[in-house]
Length: 229
Image (cartoon, rainbow, N blue to C red; front, side, top):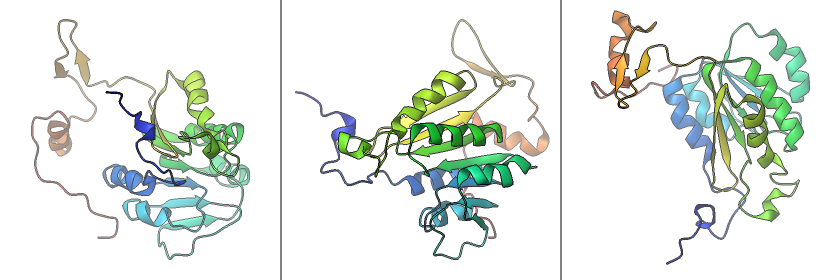
């Protein structure tokens, strides 16, 4: 029996199958970003889904603006290039999460990524939309364009300092996690893959529960709260 490729299992294809706002929100509720930057905010439909889990959101769009009241959104009606020079280059705090869904030309989206990546915190995540059009027609400039090239461009230039993973569900969502150093509190023995906790900057009494949960030593009920609750 021939298996249907994963990217072809949701037919007929609308322009959007993957619910990326909910997916991003599911991570944001654990990351609890102090600063989330969104390129291509449009009318704020996506913004309002993950904004409740963020302390502050910078939204950027040069043609549209949010139609909803989002208390922690600071909206900039300008291009991403203008945002870089007027806001991004003057940031005094790191970006915890970012979402790129503005210009779908590969060279522009890649430049947007580079600009944000420079200011992204260790283990911060940048999401890129429209990176896996599941049919040729969706790679048309009016839809995803050639944004599908961007993950490959990122791997080629930054593969040694980030993880890149693309979800192959129309129209595609890529996650890039930034890292500059290995986990200082972990060691893998050559004989097996047993994880051993060694000296860690995070080993303080106040964070001991976090560490034990992270390594499966304890799993207890925990539900993150939204900001302002």
